Image 1 (tube, helix red, strand yellow):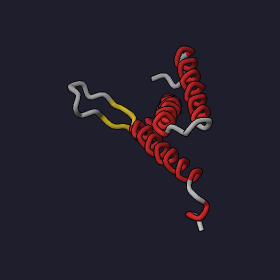
Image 2 (tube, one colour):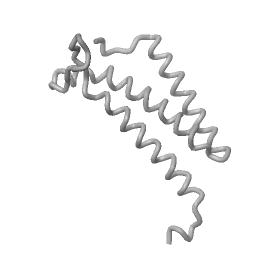
Image 3 (cartoon, one colour):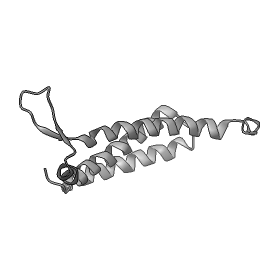
Length: 111
């Protein structure tokens, strides 16, 4: 497993990130469409996690943080860090909901 991203992967991830940031910026101008913003945050989380797995993969394998996929006939070792994508997605979904509530709630709610 190579730890460096290829040129095609780099360009794809940069374009995905730019498109997602543009989508998030566009949601601030309208009513704040939380579903669209959540999808955009998930795209950013995917790009971030993809890069982290590629860059930090060899470090985690050296530290012994790896496991075998027992469901496959050919037992291939895989990294434990794949679950971090789910954590990024859940955190971003909560932030989108709280952002909408915090910005549009009356000030008397906070006192």
